[in-house]
Length: 226
Figure 1 (cartoon, rainbow, N blue to C red):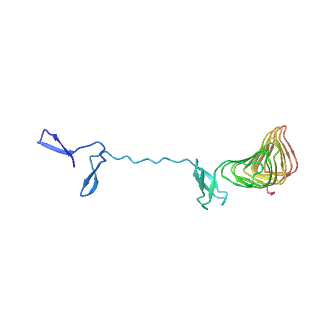
Figure 2 (spheres, rainbow, N blue to C red; figure 1 turned 90 degrees about the vertical axis):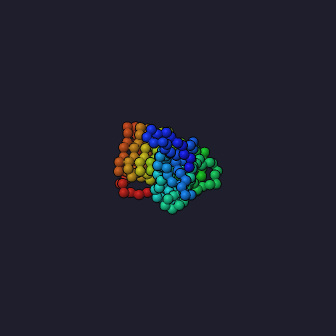
Figure 3 (cartoon, rainbow, N blue to C red; figure 1 turned 60 degrees about the vertical axis):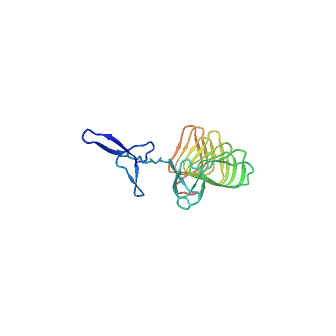
């Protein structure tokens, strides 16, 4: 141990450890290290909070949390590997099974049969036969046509769209700004805006039709199913 002598007015000399550059605050004693009581306290490294988001696993259907910026993830319930990419379905694609926690876009140039999609938000303007499931919103634009099953949290029919749903759709809420043909089942409500047109049976506990909006078809009871 390095020691430095210091003058004292009462007695000859006293000694204390010399604080050298890079001193770690630990002293060697009998082959072991002990904390020097005169050393400054060691600051503990603070942990940085990682932003998280909740997702619905498309394999087991359960909710879990993953880092918000994750490029991929694993379900904490079933350990399934989960894709988080945003995907655009291309015309003539052979990959008809799409599974992602991200969003899926189906352009107007796409015409596919047998498409099976599970995603967060779905934006569709093409013509598809298959099963489409979104844990978020489905936005229908252009001349979108769906033959099969379409399930989502919220439906948005864009202004100017002419949409045909041959098998109907099941959602929590629907906003109709354009023309929608098919059976619409909403567990919460349906809102038809000015210029919007719903042509087909509507099953919802609450239907709001603004001036300039139209509904042509039967109003069904909320316990009806597709």
